[in-house]
Image 1 (cartoon, rainbow, N blue to C red):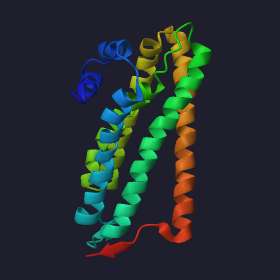
Image 2 (cartoon, rainbow, N blue to C red):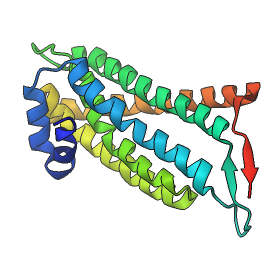
Image 3 (spheres, rainbow, N blue to C red):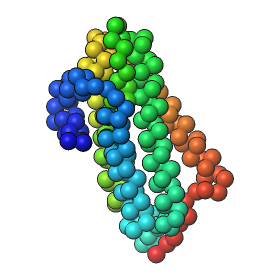
Image 4 (cartoon, rainbow, N blue to C red):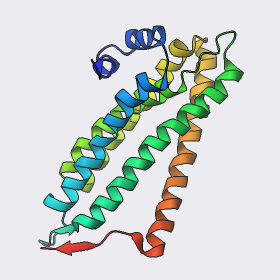
Length: 202
């Protein structure tokens, strides 16, 4: 089954990390069957939400939407950023793993990046209804669970003591925050050159 590990990551994460560790860790197994599909959830739901449903600001009755062309362009960029982000994070994990692991040098960064970001991708379903407070709450819960999966999964997947796993996971969280800030900077640049959203009201 294509997404067989996703349910396990939520239902019994420790056992699922063991199962993932026992499998051949290839780019096609974890990335092309999981990350590419999961990353489409927030992109597609976001496109529907911002073009068909829309949102209001404050007590105003005015509903704001994006034009279909503008939304499609931005959602494709967003999708591309997510799938590139998983690869970059996975490669950073493999690079850092050389410092923390012993004799096992199997690259498992893509697997770790794919499954720890799964809650964030699935939380993209709320983008169908673009309300800031709802999206923020669901996003924060998903982020918290992703961080939990990271700290819980690293010692198991990388076969290292929990103490070293904590330091390893903290380094990855730092890299993730840097990547997020870089994404915000790129967004500002893209919008600054005139490729930002185009709004319509109704």
